[in-house]
Length: 341
Image (cartoon, rainbow, N blue to C red; front, side, top):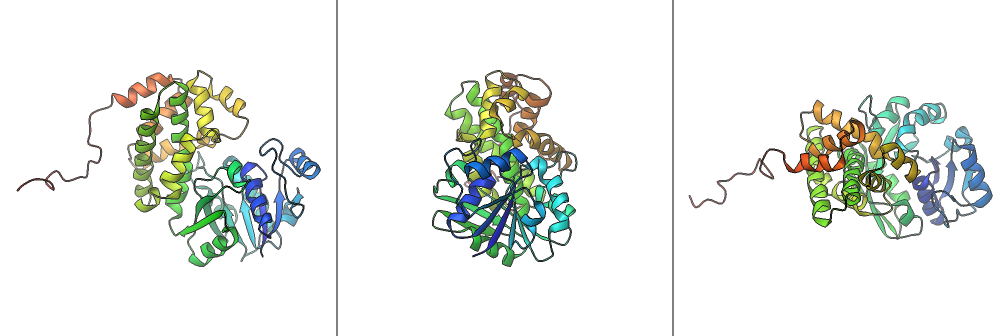
C-alpha cells in the first residue's frame, strides 16, 4: 500500500482521504486552518462539509506541512483552486524530486490564465504533476457510491501509478495524456453550471437546462481544441460527464449558487449562503479572457460574466443568448454530403 498525503481538508480532500484509508493506504490529511484541524481531530468527522462521514482512525490529521509532504509516495493537492498557488509555494521546500503530485481541484487562475497544473509546476519546478477529474461529488464518494474519473498525465507510468492507488471496487479510474482537455473541462463546466443554476432559479425547465448543457460542452470543446486539447476528452468523463453532474445535482455548489442568483440574490449573497468556494465564479473571468485570447465564441460564458460582474439581469442574459444571430449548429458540416448529385 502507498503513503498518500492530502493538502487540503475540504469536502473533496476529506472524501478521497476517507476512501483511500478504507482501502488500506496510509493517509495523512493536512489543513492550514487551525479550527478545521481541531474539529477533525476531536470529531473524526468534517461536520461542516461531510456530516456523518467518519474518518478512519488510521488517518493522520495535521497542520504541519513539512511532515505531511516528506516521505509521501503521492501528494494530493485538494485545496480549493484560489489557494493552489500559495499552498504550492509553501510546500515546495518539502517536496523532493521523484515524488508524485496529483491535483484534484478545478479552476483557472484569473490573472495569469494558467491552469492549476501549470501553477503547481511553476511553484515546484522539476516535479511530476498529474490531474484527476470527472463526475465525482464528495458527498457520494465519501459513502462509497460507484464513481468513475480520469487521471491526466504527461507520463503514462505516472498516470498508471496514480490509477493503481485510487482504483478500487467503487472508484474506477481511467488514464489519459490530455491534461489540457481534462483541466479545461473540469474548470469551465463550473461556469456553465452557474448558468444552469440561474436557469433553474428563474423557474425554467428541462428544455432550457438541456440546451445549456449541450451548447455549454460545445463552447468548452471549441476553446479546448484551440488550446491543444482532444475532442475525445470533451465527450468523456471530464467533459460532458462532469458537466452533466455539476449542472443537475443539488450537491453542486456552482449550480446552487447560480440558483440563488436566479432567485434574485447578489453574487456575494449567493456565495455566502452556499458557504463553500464557488469555483465557477473564480473561473468565469478567466474563461472569458481565454475565449478572447483564442478568438473562440463562448456566448454562455460571456453572458454569465455579464450577470456576475456587470450587473445585467439573468432574464436579460437568457434573452441575449436566444436572440443572437442565426447560425448552423455545426458550421463545419458539408451540405453536399446528403445531396443526390
